[in-house]
Length: 273
Image (cartoon, rainbow, N blue to C red; front, side):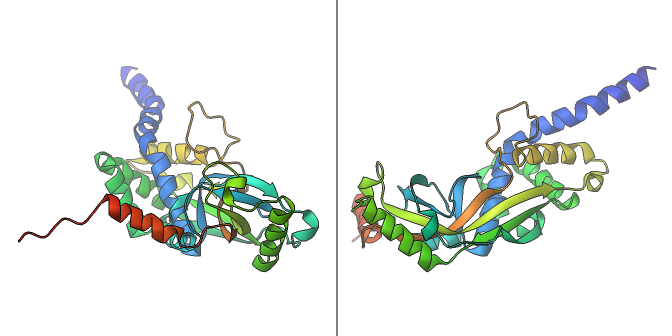
């Protein structure tokens, strides 16, 4: 009887303790997954994905970067950016688009680059064991996300944005918001639709740990789940992870001046005689 009770207690407690131990690595792993996905398609990653952020038909302002050319580099490196809604484009000036298309399922284990996993280890060196288990959980449970792309013509969006800025008498980024450096209008969205994984894949000695992580991971990506703790991610279905923009109001040469200011603040050390 004692052995039976012990076994039952272990079955009840293991998943909870396993999940608890894995909590600190859930959000960083999701960060790494989203970064790798945005890099793969050369989209600009949104710092806090949402179903209403970076929508086609809206104009946003940004406080970083300082110049439009930096957006390309940010898409290449997977650097996340924050956008602030400023204006809505007129519906009759936004080209009609079909429903979100090109739905694709992609395995998380395949999208995570070596660079992304290396960054995870560097970011949380004290959590290497948990990170390895998290990566194993993604691999063994065949965890995958279905995402889609919605896009319209960039030239049409650029025209509509320029017209709306003139109508609203916006002549500089400061007219849009505090510390604004420029305006962007998305013409393509990378959209999360559905997350799924195979529980059977977690069978084995570490099954409770792997499943504990996957439950936490899934809770971040499904806002309909009843979650007891406040997590960094609570993503509704069809959350926009990343986007491609057209730009306006960025000051030419701002990035070069910004780089020059940094050099002035951090002068190169003098050579020894």
